[in-house]
Image (cartoon, rainbow, N blue to C red):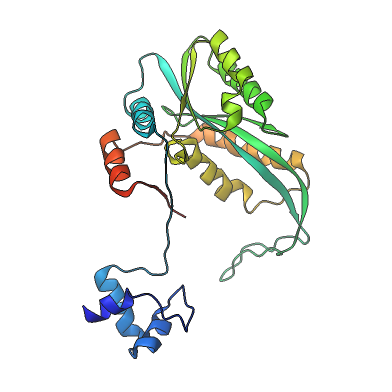
Length: 266
């Protein structure tokens, strides 16, 4: 226990260390790295990991969490729940040399340097009940583009009541958007709390498309990038399944009250 307590002490200022390895800490404490590793394993300590957090100061935190979680766990009858957001500034990057393919015992390799060929913004609407995604790519992400995408979503789901989860980005609350929504009452926007984008399930999809289609891609133009995004989403819709929301409102609020924060894993 004494060793464990010592590992939790602030690192000596003379070392200036913020990321400890078992060998470095063992050298500082006069112990072997094997001993340090055993103690970390026994007590579940993982000093190489870090999580980020963001405080939410939204005065309507509880009301907004209850509203959105209710849509996920108990969606209204004969209505469709959608999660909408935009992934902005996606870069069309072209490597300066061809990628070397995966080989036995060797990973795929790509050059560190690249050429920028422009950007696009992906607007996506995730249907909570099915996991299906409606998408469009635009040059910018102003209120004009957001309204244009809302109209596309409305056309995709004609004559259906739509409940749309989105964040507090200014374009989502623009007067022009509000005026259009007043003329189209079958569409209702539900806003996540400030610093609460983790409540929007389309963010899960953005993480997936980034890892599986964008980050390692090579794109000679924005057109190539948009084509890759479109192909991925077409394939996604052929095999999609819904994401399952498991946390109840009380579980989330209990955590928020005790920690006063929300967490994201990286």
